[in-house]
Length: 516
Ligand code: 3UK
Image (cartoon, rainbow, N blue to C red; front, side):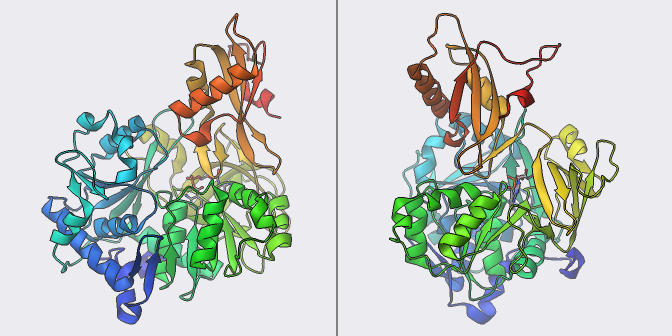
């Protein structure tokens, strides 16, 4: 499929609404709180779309969604797109100042927030210059906030979709880099349908009878695609889980209760399930699952094999990126090389090049470039970073790769110092500056280290200030401090106290020397 196969005037709400013709009363989404058919979702989308229009949200304007995965997230996403506005899926794990940056950067006019996340606005409300209205799912906001349910009830049920062009933007996600502000990545209506066809249908073999469950959240395009856009594109249902996936029991309980056929999880997630005592003791029934997917970081062959041995299930590992919206190199059912990312997805071209941009020989490690129609055009308001990443038709992924003689691609780390922890970015620079802001720390360096399952986690090498004891207590204090200042997953899992850090002649810390 090519973008030009879509009508010129095309709105992604078609991915939801095509289901009204054949399966309006089929269940579209399930959560512990709500179960909605395609007809019910569409009605709520129309009501919310009308409500947003009456709040004066126009085509091309931004609306933030800050909520755990829930029915209202999915409804908001399609309502925003249907009126031609741009849905900003916001990372629920971030702190208020990071939300402030995103909301100001895109000048969101409306923010739809879940009551459980109201604390995320603490201390920043008066700086949200462009946000005219806050809609709270579940209510309980401040004076002047609107309540989701009454907003929806007041909106009319008839709504025509905005006549967006297939290349108009419909979604914005923020991705963090090693330094500087997060990068806003804009995608167009065409990118959703393209990735659905090219990967979910043509590679994964997703079909109408499937039911998906993802622990990757909807604010992450791995989750938005895998657990919302792709299932609805083929008329399948999705299970949305608000509970944190790091609690293994949550995932297994949702699988047992909602019986998905496809499970999307990060490599750490599969390793954690395998280590769960109740799972090992056979207390959970996961027999509904026919296929598993992994992305976000590489899946070690050992974890793939252990999962296969324990469950009989294949895990399809594929590399995706927010810049491409979804997966562009992938293993596929019946064609899996454990430990590799598989082969390029039809519709994408990839190249492995040296520092000068020349192709490297087969088997050699180089920089991975990808070309495809679902790739974004740049980072919002960040031309310098954009020029370094979006190289004409080609995207510089920042990943090191090699290809074997059979054409399978093997991840060989990053060309920057960025870490993927549980599939989510962690910048060593950010962890370091947090640690250094602690009174006990003189200087430090953060690198990735593999844990017992061969999965990367942050490790900190810390030089303490004079007179501070290199004790377990200090270690605990530093970890607690990191948890308070940053999202939980960014905290160092190991802290090693050292007398000094390896440096270049110019005083730059050589992180590569510290990698285990
Ligand atoms: C790394 C992988 C090895 C790699 C994503 C599927 O992860 C996603 O998007 P992000 O923008 O990060 C992209 C970077 O993550 N990575 C992702 N998958 C793999 N490394 N093996 C993998 N299977 O460094 C890449 O450049 O957060 C994944 C679908 C949509 C996504 N946005």
